[in-house]
Image (cartoon, rainbow, N blue to C red):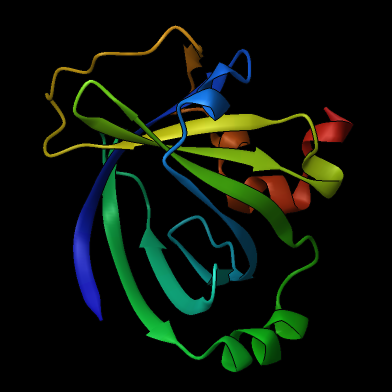
Length: 158
């Protein structure tokens, strides 16, 4: 169980060149028990592990927010998914190293097919970032790209 301040930036991805540079990949399925504006509560199967996560509202800088996560049994996640709000997220996450940074690139499926997002966790909000050529634009503060939003407003409906 861990409680931290998550600091990350989020970007759209313009092509699949990152696939030639990937370090690893794993399937993710996740649903949301709450998408309240002050907090979201999600359950997730990531690879062969289960998690429950609570994320707070973004701080004023838009890149940081409270995050609490606990590993739970995959069977528990599967039991909770039917209780989730409509709109389960299915995606494949690729870990892609670039200049001593590790990007998490999510390729969405189903109703969010066609959306590819990269996230980079930061040590601090002022950290200098070196972006690869396959990054398109920063969307950190654009709520449309939050997974919780995508469950209610899938990318294919934009």
